[in-house]
Image (cartoon, rainbow, N blue to C red; front, side, top):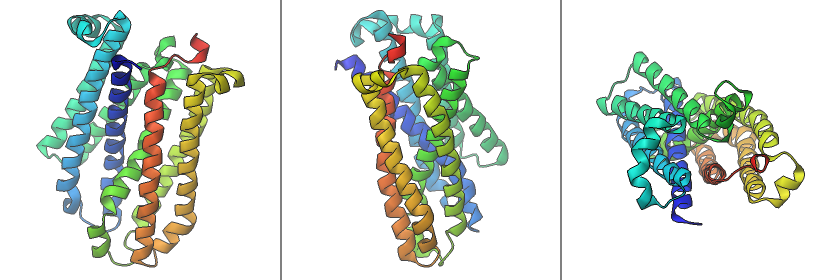
Length: 299
């Protein structure tokens, strides 16, 4: 695998992770309040992490454009630099990439300013939606045109896995940190965990429906699924997602009831979410690999 392919995969993974965190953070700010906790108690720390995530996605989007320039020109990264502006300014891919980069810069600016209001939350939600649609249009689904079922399915799929992964990441590594668990009263996390679980369930349904459609649309036959690198990578992604679903089911039926009874139950939920987060990050990495490959039906 050459440097251009590695840059494609790395930048796609970075922007996917940043997007997922921002989606999870957006929802978590409301879920945290459902416990009767003031939003101000976690806002400062969460804002710093949001700045890191939006910056990561903005850089990832810009770097992905450079990698795409090299691919389109059939040249190395050094030779692609003089061609970068032409690609950005004169191609649909470049326009979409510029919009997605700008969307993350806008999000960075909002969080940098420390604006915490209903209006800023609406702007952030719209900006995240714009990012999701433009990123979907830059993939294989966008090759057939903007107003297509394939693009709609990809945008929903991208948003759904962002919601699920983000909810798990924010919960596992921020909202349910040890310092917060110790400060909670028994049962104080019930509403938060219930809302998170419901959001994850909706996301999984969206992922399943759009994933089946996209897999059929891109892979075509079972032979392609089993005997191509694209198909094998897709199978690996599916296996990681299924393992994460199993952990989510464990939490829903065993972890959440335990969390309502004791602090040790909350720690059990957190530990399960942490394992689930690594599985979902693996799924995002697999998705990043898929973006650098041509699907079998396009060959």
